Image (cartoon, rainbow, N blue to C red):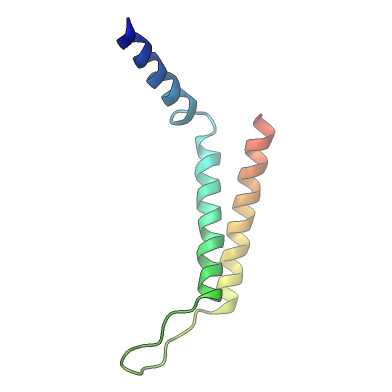
Length: 86
C-alpha cells in the first residue's frame, strides 16, 4: 500500500510541473530572464584584461540594449501569461 502512495505522489508532482499547460510560459520566463541578466552582466562586469597585453573588445552597447529589451519583453510577457492563467 505504501508503494502505491509514493507512486501517486511522484505522478502528481510530475503532472504539476513537468507536463503543465504553462510549461511554455515558464520556459519563456527563464529564457527572457537569462537574456536580461547575462547581457547586463556584460555591461557591469566586462571581460578581464588579456594576459598577452592585447586590447579586450567590449561588447557593443546597442547590441546589449537590444538584447536586454527583447529579454525584458519576453520576461514581462511570460509573467503576464502566468498571472493571467491563475
